[in-house]
Image 1 (cartoon, one colour):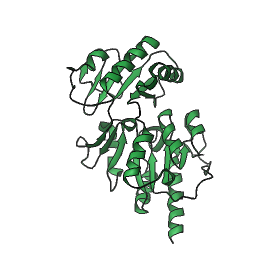
Image 2: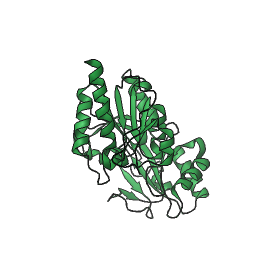
Image 3: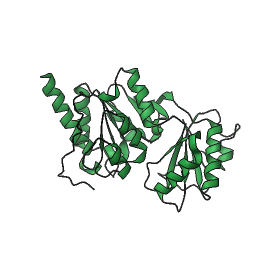
Image 4: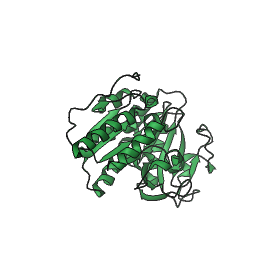
Length: 294
């Protein structure tokens, strides 16, 4: 863990002025109690005022975005589901609009389920769709989620399953006894190029998306639409599902509480989420921008 008094390490390649900040939420922007601190709220507003767009890039589904929906400012967009969806949050809780969906094909999902069942017996699944959440009976209750349907994953992914008309955003795979990092490695080897596998939970809970879907690839699409290069992006994260985004961005910061793989991938490091590590860096970026323009 990084102490509250430690200052962020500045990446060597800091010459390009930032035009967009991409930040993870849990373990990064949010404190452990899932709040956005007053200091962070002020930093986000200052960034937008200085002309730096802020994108929330998270593994969360759109329905869990209420915690930051008041802080999306002008564009109103967030990248959810590890890149599976770009969502307009302007409407407020329960009225979000899907701007872009990068679904996991059901055939790929079924292959991933079976391959991982064979490689790691005891794995249980849930299916995340645009508006629905479905799970196997043995899948643990998490985040007080109330599933729309209970059935084996193969049934949940069938052509006539409940919610069959909705795109699948990702599959969640949980194992009750395996080490989280070992489970991730095993799943990636087993599933191969049929899907993209990552994790953001401290438990052995994996997130399985379309083959080319990640935070980084969807962020790259959003930046291309805005004429923003990767050198003009500053990214923040703390878990393995952030690694590709931190590697892609021109400047990137691992949180003081980050997973070792994230620290290795990032070009810099800031203090922990509970010490407002994202705000600490944004404040400095805004100051640099104002000094350069003044």
